[in-house]
Length: 63
Image (cartoon, rainbow, N blue to C red; front, side, top):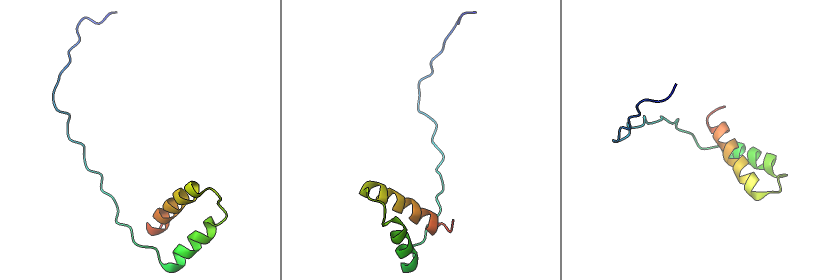
């Protein structure tokens, strides 16, 4: 079967719903120290920064 009719409707896209984000808390000095200690063996600085950001997010969200 073939397409007999194709309609293109132009106009504004519908607004996206805003995603609610959780407020995160700051890490305590102990938590920050533990995180830095656990990442001290990671040689690649870019990877270490990414892992630190991930770890901070997880710890701060009480995950």
